[in-house]
Image (cartoon, rainbow, N blue to C red; front, side, top):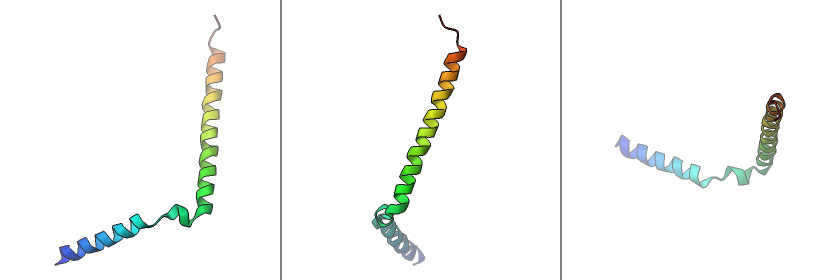
Length: 62
């Protein structure tokens, strides 16, 4: 009998998780996450760009 109750509870929990849409309920934090993500991607790209410029400056020109 415990296995049946466990399955019922699991199905109810999965239904609750699948039904909720956290992003639509909290638009403010989503905007902050997106802005932080874009800035982070920009800074990582800038780091690799400068790393590449330094590598090219060390390489002798032909």
